[in-house]
Image 1 (tube, rainbow, N blue to C red):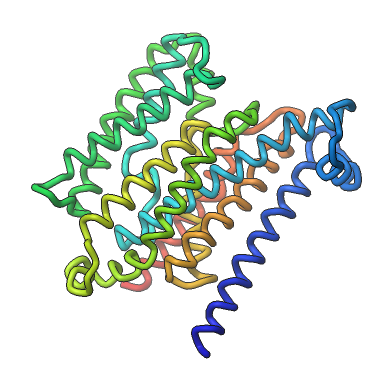
Image 2: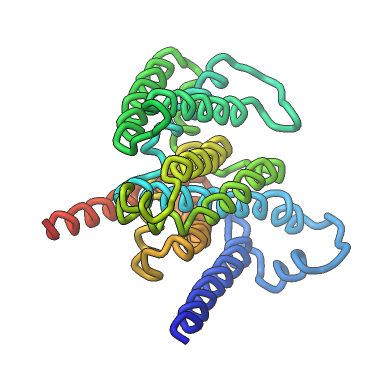
Length: 340
């Protein structure tokens, strides 16, 4: 009976978060420099076989909706990865960027911009392609450095991520000094934004988000057991090294995909899993999907604020998340200090 009650509670929480996400998308579509009534938004989104005729239809279906959905996807990806890394490293202060993939993505994007590599591949510009390639290459270098025999110790993996990430950031800093007229483009990408994105960007992120989410959810129970410690988890029948590899690869892939289409949007993977954990508890079978929905809601509204705060100009959404995330991190750090 107790298990049934717990299942009902979990379903209610996830359903509430999903409803919150759908409402967030609906209301945020109406907000912007050009205000559109909710009734008109409803007619445009749900009227079947409607063609793009009016200006508001173009604004909603070609400009705002893909941007909002991309923000939701990026928020979900970073939050899922954050929950997974926090569980794997057994540290609620961990962040998906801590493994260094973001630095590799930044270097790849900066290289593409500075070298003025034009054109596209499968409809995508080369900036996100180079960013994704840089993130994946960095992930493999970190994994190779962290591997000891056939094992990947968590401490070694974390140290390798910090070292390789620091080296990559040094190269990014060097690229900024030689960027010249391309400096504003590189800096804007590094600040994180989903402005001027299209449906193809959403389609690029979607498969990595779905596949990564399924993999992380499949190993959620193993993450629960591993919070007891790797040795205890091994005694309980968990293939610890196999689980670590799957979680590292899946979380790094969704992080790399998110960074490649949005730039560096910090603190989402730190804040949202921690807040959701306080609401739903530490069970990763609930925490991972709840974090995905919570992260999607958060970034949709953060991007809406980025569109409205200094309208008609726009602020990079990474600035909004940093303004909210830095005080949250200070509070979290202070709260942990009180426990010791």
